[in-house]
Structures are given as structure tokens and as C-alpha cells.
Amino acid sequence: MSGWNSLSGYLQFRPGGGGLSILKTKRKVWCVLDEAQCKLVYYKNEEELRHNKTPIGSINIKGAGISLDLDTHNQFIIL
Image (cartoon, rainbow, N blue to C red; front, side, top):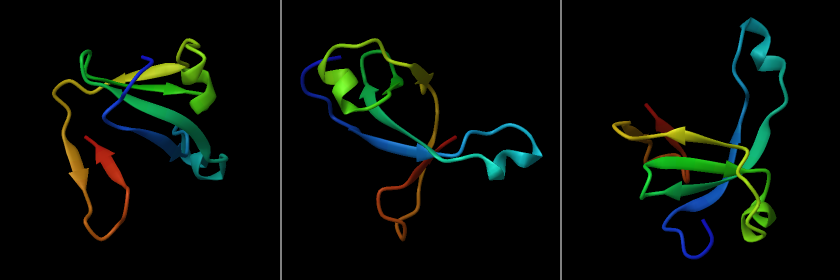
């Protein structure tokens, strides 16, 4: 995944799971859109990508919808 990527940046989220998930700490990962495989690939940080480390995970977004809120800068929802 080294080289130029059309979309990349930090993603901050709160891990889901159960009624107490609101108490969990937010997590921040470096994400890269892999257009060839239709995946959002994520790493611990940007340095991990630069050093060609293995990603910590990926989300298959083939067929997914994206919802944008024009009033909220740099935020979107993957449906």
C-alpha cells in the first residue's frame, strides 16, 4: 500500500459492543482507501504504513453507501 493514495487520514471512533460502549475510550487509527480491493485499510499510525507494516485490519466497503453531512467538516458514515 505504499505510494500515493487517493484518500487517507486518521479515523477516530469509539469501539462498539454492548450498552457500556459509551464508556470506552475513543480509538484513533490511520486509514487508507484501497480502491483496487474496495477496502478501507487501517494501521496503528501513519508510520506503520510508511514502513510497510501489516495493517491491523480492514473494512470491505464494496457495495457500501457513504453518507455525508455537509455541515460537519471531514466526517462521513459508512452504511
